Length: 544
Ligand code: G6Q
Image (cartoon, rainbow, N blue to C red; front, side, top):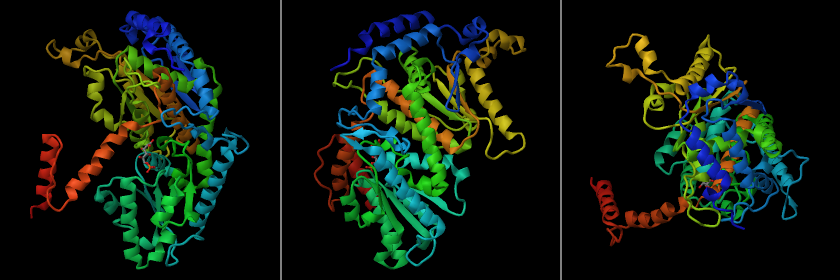
């Protein structure tokens, strides 16, 4: 059954009229009219405090957004996801990342089979393996202990593990080192292993399909490096494990499937960091912390599934994103963690959000006539402040911001955490309220300079605060964004779980590889630019 066209829905049109009426009203006015706005437009759930009072919405806008969600069948779509219906319709797959963190006692049936039991079995194998590596029961080929882990994967099989390792470094085993190789650029591999001793290095090859060109190229390089250093093909058995859904290809590559950790086609790549794809995370922080992270995910899952829309964090965040995107015309979102350990969080979110919602047709294939997924980007604060915040404050574009901060530092250093959080809080305030030309002049600035020193304000932001970055909080934070992405996808009537857009470039590269590697220049039948680039590359490469 196809959903009614979004822009024809009365709820959408009501929102449009409301946006026309209030869209330009200044946050200064909103706050002046309601002295309690800062407390009223805030929610605390699952250990996360969300202040959305600096978003350009009023109670009516929020109500109309919730009505739109209801008209879109959001409640039913959430249930359909949790029940394992094949909501990824273009790939005919269930979307059950929530099963990866369901408690062992829960049952989630897919075609009559309980997938939670499968998940728990893999988690137990991961924990046992982690324990063996940590205790030294698992050793390298020459009997030395494993001290270095290199995770090889790309996209969804890389961004989550890298982000989680960085985020939870404070909880990690400092006697081990962790490295991540994703790019097919040989430099990535070469630099990752440069200082490593092969005898103490474990490679985890992460690939759902085990056919991904980049990952297989890096895995082959790793195998050659390892065999050369250790002088024995048999070393592969002790230095390589795989994470995949494809046992045949794993075996073909030469990794014993006894050393393979599985997952399933109902886990999308960018939703897989809490599956066996997170083996490097578990090796870094241990099984107990990993379980705590899963519990954090699950707490947010439960909240998302059961909380009424008005108190539902992912629903609210998703609807605010729709408001900013479709009714205020904001084409991007800046994610600004004031927490150094979250330095890879924006990069991780880029895939989660843009691969999920960067779509231009609805579920039944009709072209959309509204904007879908915005561009996500960001850097940790305060670094961003000395770089691109200029544009956020005084540029011509509207860029809603998500600020993320914590009450306690994991590395307290004198007053530096207060300094950090003072900056976070001040940035939201400056973006919202700005500085009028009158205020600038009153401060004694001369007339010619006043326009340059004026800040228009009215730039929306949300602030997420938690007490401390723990594995549990990280899990909840990621699940918050995962579900917010889904909410947006439901409103836009798109498939947030496929990724056909990455296919074309991959296919064309296959032809191009043949043309680059042919001994003599083959006949080229591309456009004139592509032909010229191929020729120029061959010439640059081959000229002594
Ligand atoms: C994520 C995408 C994509 C995928 C990579 C790696 O949702 O599907 O980023 O994760 O292409 O794929 P493999 O894990 O199969 O190597």
